[in-house]
Length: 52
Image (tube, rainbow, N blue to C red; front, side):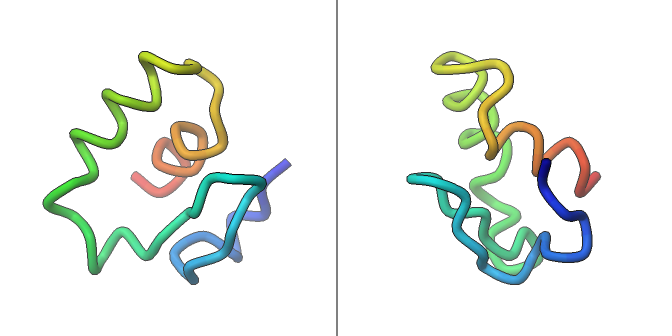
């Protein structure tokens, strides 16, 4: 389980870095598409959904 309080602080979840979406908003859509192709429930995808 990812702690929502940690999102956006550049934490690392396994091999996937959950970066500050406020500083990387341009690439979020592309990264989400890539994450969903690889694994619909990857930490990056979950974190992005929680951050919306």
